[in-house]
Amino acid sequence: MNCEHVKDQLVDYLSGQLSAPEQAALTAHLADCADCREELQATQRLWQAMGTVRVPEPDEHLRPEFYAMLSAFKDEMKATPDYSLKGLWHWWLNLEVPRPILRAVYSLCLLGVGLAGGYWLNRRPATATGEQQQIAALATEVSQMRQVMVLSLIDNPSATERLRAVGYTKDLTAPNAKVVSALLSTLDHDANVNVRLATLEALIPLADDPTVRLGLVHSLARQDSPLVQSALADAMVQLQERRSVAPLRRLLQQPNLDESVKSKIQQSIHTLQTGQPAAPSTPSRHDQTLTSPQPEQPATRAV
Image 1 (cartoon, rainbow, N blue to C red):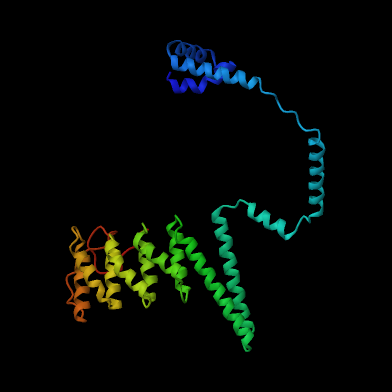
Image 2 (image 1 turned 135 degrees about the vertical axis):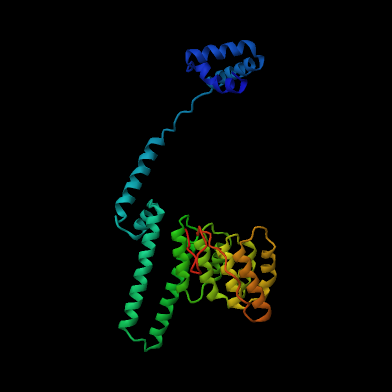
């Protein structure tokens, strides 16, 4: 038994709340340890001093004031409507609902707003300037809600939910800076290859944005999947992004680089430098999910 443990048990020792074996062990320790005996004496003196402290008597007005306060509270509760907006708002804030259910409710609300807006647009022709402004405001609100949905799902632990978030971006006419930043971060760091490939497909149509284009170039150095490396090389050729030549050359210097990826990168560099497609080379296996060489066909994506 160490001294720290003994000091923690001194109060129980003095009040007789220890079991017989613990009481005997602590008594034996006190007999051999002068520091613990001194601590015990200090604790005894503290107890004795606390015993001499006068217990304050409650004020004679304490009870009447308490009951007056309780009566005022009851009157206030009776005067408050049971279904006031304030009460419903407090009830909603204090309601404990699992996050998946909240996301489902939010998705249904978003779907409802979109359906209502579409029905209203089809039923009422926009002839007046006021109606056109209302349509524009509604479209802006729906777009903002979609962007909020993307940001709420892009960090979800489920790869399926992250794929859904990336899919929502295809319906956005002008993603804001936060959505673009979230997509670039997902392309660089997501653990799932399929999510990264889907994110790349969503980013290519946004490549008119200099931030997106530069982010795709920088992403080349952060990829370790042959599928994503090949897809990015194709994207650089599609966008005719000459700034990607240097990162592509650095990729060629990586040890254990997949042979099919190496061939793809070499062709991409040639095309970017000359503007002409390189001569096709003999294809080799590059799909991580295949177990034997097969004819050219779309790579199987595995979640």
